[in-house]
Length: 226
Length: 287
Image (cartoon, rainbow over all chains, first blue to last red; front, side, top):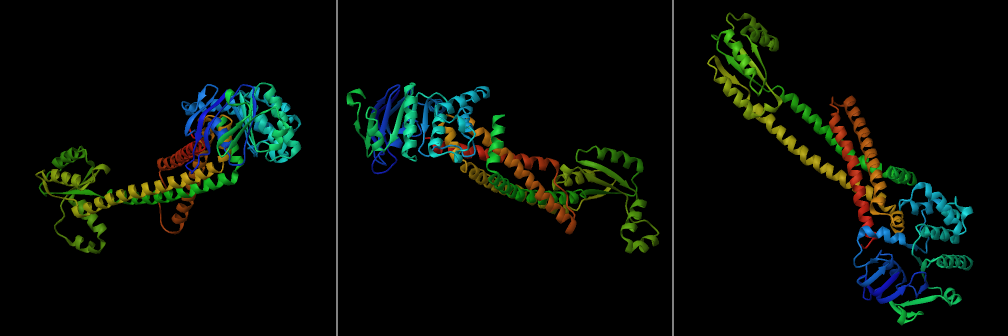
């Protein structure tokens, strides 16, 4: 599904942001990507989403390789890989349902199919009643749920979440996490970057990949399985 | 259709920015409009002077009128010649006494008409260069009944060099103004695109193709460009009216120039938007 082989990413500084990282996220797997701020978590997610190109090594997502992918293939890749940001990145002038519909419009889904699909997605994240609300009228947790619904719009194979609970209180964080677990249970792989050790501790059964200064220092699945 | 809908939405979302962009484009195209108005009026004035370029063939007194009429027809068939008018001795005297009123007494006291008959030849607009005028004068001198062919060589030379200087200056200044306008439009549209960088990055993240992202901006660039062009047209018209009513009589711009100016503004708006979005997409994406 997602495979990183000896990936190094340097931005020209003294130390690379990511150095010789390898792991494999299987279909339907849930994993935490953890580490302190600046450890390279966001860079790893951007490399998988192919917003960044590795300096060396290879990132593979489904049938796409970072070494061979063409620019014209990027939209298709990104429809298969949902991305959720810490700051939600919703369009402020669009309502919750319009934000979700937007993700379907850009991929050319016929208008007649967008309405029912949006209702279903908002129902899935528990926001059917807030469909007409603008982002500023929603709480942080609700905004993140809209962002999740948008990321799920095109049935991605994998969901990347960059500190999705970073701006949320404990209750909202748990709500978002349980939403991810439900999504994962339906077959979508989830890779969630977080530095929240407490959150990870509470979910001891989930795979943990830990980065330190750009290097992979721990993977609970074990070296043999990567 | 989606591109148009999105463009309208984009304009509605940031009306102040759209107005600012239209104004920036409008003011930069306005400088071009003012230049166009000046260049056009210089052209009109020069054409007016050039229209007076003519060759006068003074005829011998013994030339028969039948022969002159045959020659006049022949001369009118020259490619350079617009018209050839026969002025008899009597007409020459009458015109001279009418035009030079201070000498009217002298003319009326004459016992013999000293003025020769002539053929006044006016030239087509494309054949008013010194070389063409001289060539026509030389051919006229070839007729045995022509005493002398005159055309005011110095005057023709001056008008011609003035026309060349004005033409060269128009091209250089026009290009400078056009490049200046293009740069300003580019900056204004780039600002508008940068203000929506977040939206572009969101579209990119959720899998929009480059063409999908670019299309509404192209429509928006075209609309703001045309809006700026119309604003410039209005400002140029207002300037024209003010000058016309208070300072001097002016000629308004030809329709083709107006259409060209509007198309220029619209096209530049669109190209600037395309370039700005393209740069933004490349900046956000490493591939």
